Length: 345
Length: 113
Image (cartoon, rainbow over all chains, first blue to last red; front, top):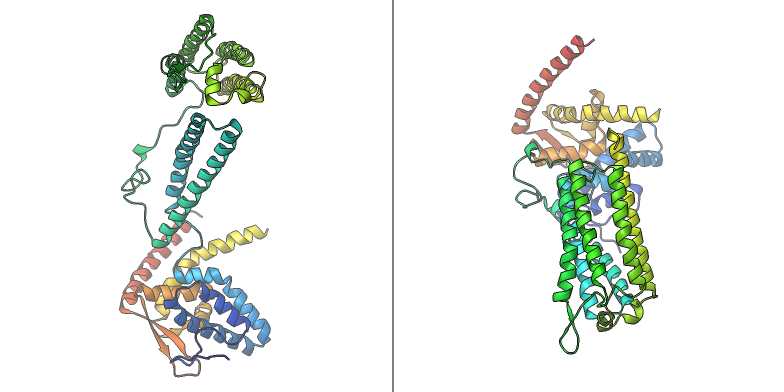
């Protein structure tokens, strides 16, 4: 049973009752259009197609070929529908897109690491077994990454369709047009800028602070309420002084790079010596179970997994070595680049 | 080779994009319907494709530059468009600008033979 509704114009509206190519085409176009516009575009488009068909058939074309040609010329139905709506096909338009990308970058650089590290730390103090921590952290990182991407994209897609502009959103777009005075300065990548120096010194300062802190106020307490230090109690003062001296030398090295303005092969050699002098003893202490306090590991419930000779210590040693190698390679590469830019070291 | 033709036809399309609006506003001083207007434009030397023209007519009507009316005299009802007063005023402005552009381009071409 087909209900053929005719409106005042005598043309059928609503679901077509025949199945010609034209019917299918117009149906495909109307699908993506809002109800209010459908009837009018339906009639007009059919009339235009029919007019062109008549003209072509009069000129001698076969009806089927003519229909095929006309519809092909009109093109992809969804594209035509978008033209009718005055919209270009796309999820997020050119005016919203820069803000979208800026927001995504901020979120991934700030929120993702923080939430992942927070989860890691919390799980560590809850005493979850190490396999669970690693698996959980990876899962959390993936989940946060997906959510950040999805909801940001969704919100911007909705904003695009709602016709919003970014004015008045703090931090994403300032009021008014682009102002050259607000351009950020070019970051230097030769590793000898002031921000590099500050970062190095801040990191180096943290080391003695952390060592001191874990003696005085470590996070875990044993059954008697006494503090459990993280570092092995048998760590002789020799080692403490040794690493402290290394820290001071590393700070001096950082200042030297800053003063020199660039990395040089001499400074690379200094960095290499410092890195090896720090990493080799660390690995040796770690592998011999003399670095971490066993009572601390017990309190965490990690001793079997992380004791000397375990996989965790092996992996940590390898990681420490890799970090040292990377550090040396990185500054060597910076020296090579600086050499290329002009002037031998 | 075909990419050169694609570039050429893309640039030609860009050039014609502005003139299509002016041509419609001028032609629709006498009422006309979709396909007939398309044929008229083509004969006048401003070919515009259907998938550009039909949405364009609706857009111009939404902007108040055209008026439309369904004509049910014949067996196939058709939507006739006509330039409104606002459209007429705009057409005059665009035409002036068009003449200026034409003389400017001519002058540039002359000076840079």
